[in-house]
View (cartoon, each protein chain N blue to C red):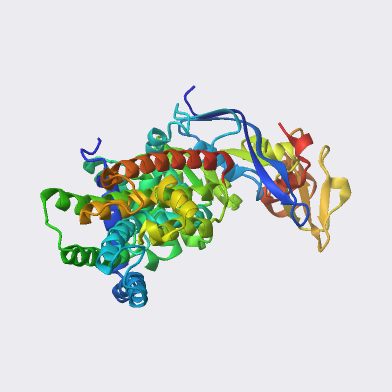
Amino acid sequence: MNAVITTRELRKEFTVRVKTGRFSRARRTVTAVDGVDLTIEAGEMVGYIGPNGAGKSTTLKMLTGILNPTSGHVRVCGLEPVPQRLRLTRNLGVVFGQRSALWWDLPLRESFRLLRHVFDVPRADHAARLAQCRDLLDLDGFLDTPVRQLSLGQRMRGELTAALLHGPRVLFLDEPTIGLDVVSKQAVRGFLSDLGAAGDTTLVLTTHDLADIERLCPRLIVIDHGHVVHDGSVERLHHRYGSHRQVVIDLEADWDPGHAPEGVTAKVDPDDARRVRFHLTPGGPSAGELVARLALRAPLRDMSIVEPDIEDVVARLYQAAPADSAG
Amino acid sequence: MAYRNPLTPYLRLTAAQVRSQAQYRFSFVLDLFGQTAVTVLDFLTILVLFRITPVLGGFELHEVLVMSGIAITGFSIADLAVGNVEQLAHYVRTGLLDAMLIRPRRVLPQLLAVDFQLRRIGRVVFAAVVLAVAAAASGVEWTWWRWLLVVTAPLAGAVFFSAVFVITATTMFWWVDSREFSASFTYGGRDFTSYPLTVFGGGFRRLFGYALGFGFVAYHPTLALLGRADPLGAPGWLGWSGPVVASIAALAAGALWRTGLRHYKGTGS
């Protein structure tokens, strides 16, 4: 076990003043993060998702040393984030999709040079990491362009490089693909995927784009109302919330209900009587068995397998009451 | 790997900010003139006052100009170096404060460096010229200790006003927008310091001049520099108290800043 991030019973409360009358204000305590337990191992790639206001960025701020927890235990790279901020931040890379770490009016290259001084990176290490990022992220075409003139996709590639030049052990990415076009999204995801596969860097990613998660993160943590409501693989999420893969079969002739194999129910397409769908449930037959059995009873023309849509599952998860889905 | 000089990264950040602003040369020059003009107006106010009266609180024009020269030079250096800390509420809202917290550097010097405004340098130069001319016109004998005093007084003033900037800005960690309140101590303090203590009423003088320490910035050093006794009867050695008072203010500012930042980390606002 080599945990890079551990939290136990992590809580954060904010006191907000609510106007109750012309001159009177009442203090109300809002719990943004309510007893979060996390263990993230070195080299993991973790998606941390939740609806707006669920406590995602508050958690991230507690992990990066920006905010002090109200109570609970938190260690990142073996350090306590707020008291040991100066040491911890040397081990962290942080990318905010909505905020730039680059110098707006200076060429991209200058930002990298400045960060070398801010993070005290030895010249040779810095040069080696920059060379690698230039290569993988294809930066050469705009290294001498002022950041304000970069496209969003180019800027995000710059932000990723900026966050990696000091060789962080943990990379936090807050909405790294927000606003990017499809091509840039693919470039960013491809780069992060390679980075994660190399295994030296632990990645924690918050996003509203679930395709990021499906592409990058074997492990998914869902937070809602300050509670962790799911921690596990994407498959386990589907399993728990009853979303299944579907087999869609096109027949030569109209569907005859008598042809259905035992243990599965067929749904006929309302627009096409020759198309049927079967939900694959964990206890039932596999896709292969199902197709083999069906082929014995009716001539098949075509078939396809539809993966469950993670967006639907997560939407259902967000709507569920926080108390009974916690765990 | 640690830098031999711990200031190096902050100086590099400052230099980068100056290079950024140099990208907009015309706007920079315009701002430089605008900022200098404001300081010119501060001194013009004093000249206008002396058209009405030959003596202000027992002091002649060149004496008041030495006093305001020390005060405004000190204030302008502080404004150049740490004045942008006034924008703290804005830095909190835009997330710049958080961005500074995720780097392995001290937060306050980073904030000062990344938003350094070189255009404010015009004020320093103009105020220093006024001080030099007024001091030269005072006709005193330039002994070594007068040279020492005329250099250290504005520098101690700069440290003192820097502390005032930080202390008043830090209140924003508790009251989200308190710039008006801050301005009454920073800009108000500068105006108070530019005139002899003798023109202010007793209670106001005791509070601002002595309890809050503004009287030690320019009034007492000017008396010592000009070789005058205090009409209010305070001892002459107070003219040398500036660096001590400034150090106390700086320590208080540092402690308050750390408390404020801790509060921010507790509340996130």
